[in-house]
Length: 102
Image: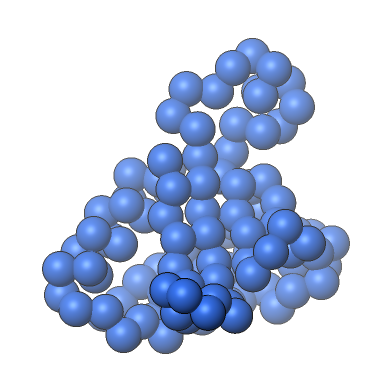
């Protein structure tokens, strides 16, 4: 399962993605890969788990990372994404995030 946002469909400069396997294997669990995989812009800024909270209004998606995660990956602890989506897409995004986040 995956939820992703990008600033442009064709010429993407900024993006955020969340992904989680629905049925983790024993190996995934043993390696700590059974949580949410997130990525900001590219694989150089990504990880598994470390998300403290995700909140969403009709205008803004806010992701709060655990302090250790933010420090290790050298990102702000809180990242906000302005949403300029039609109501139907906001509903899809909200639904996808609810299914993805435990």
